[in-house]
Image 1: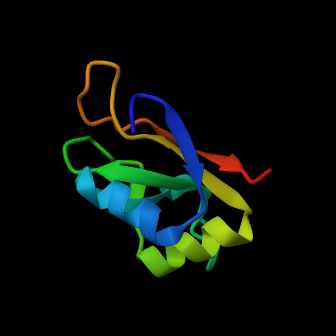
Image 2: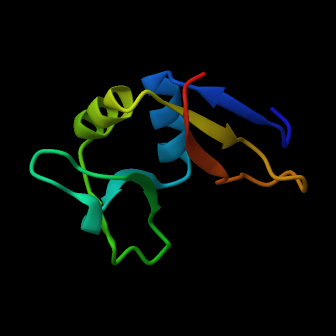
Length: 92
C-alpha cells in the first residue's frame, strides 16, 4: 500500500498493523468507568503515555465492536517510511 489510507474492522489486520509498529492497545485513563475501558488509543513504545492505561486485546476489541468503530490507517508515509497514522472512525 502506498501513502493512501485504508479502513478496516478486521481484528487480525488491526493487531498486525499495531504490533508491526511496536504498539499496544490502550485506553485513556480519565475516561474509564467500571468495566468500560473508555476511549480507545494505540500506545507506541517510544511515546510518553502518562494518560493511557494498557488493556488486553480482548478488552480493546470488545469496546471496538460495542462502539461500532472502524480503524482508519496508513501503511506508508509519502516518503516511503512506515506510517503510524491511524484513527478510530464510526463504521459507515
